[in-house]
Image 1 (cartoon, rainbow, N blue to C red):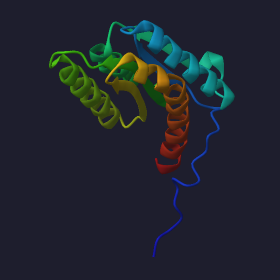
Image 2: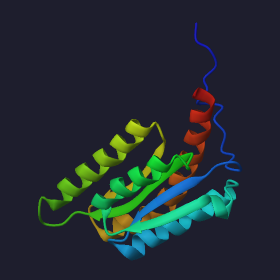
Image 3: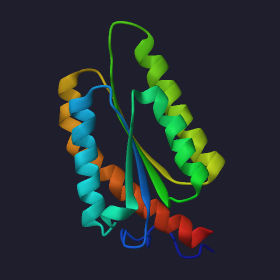
Length: 154
């Protein structure tokens, strides 16, 4: 017999949470808009401005090392990765997308901290712009929900 599904009751109340965000600067206009939507949604969910830390790194490959440094402090309930990788004409797209994603996951698992991965991987700039605000908001909601769920589980 199954018990209660803790995931179904996970709260979107961010009032007592501290959230760290790492934003890749590459494709700056897009990632700035991602960050703006994310921070606005965190505020709407009750995360106090003083409990939101936003750092910027050059590109998506640098996101995991900054996330690791933040996770090492144990000051955050959840982290958020923001970036935008647009396919080009070379294999570089796959390398950056795969390695940044694997790095984000590794930090999350190694530190048992939820990380909302909103590093967009798209074919073109139009696809990125179409996803920017929604994915920024989604990342905030995932971070808050997972932070509360982890608090319930641990």
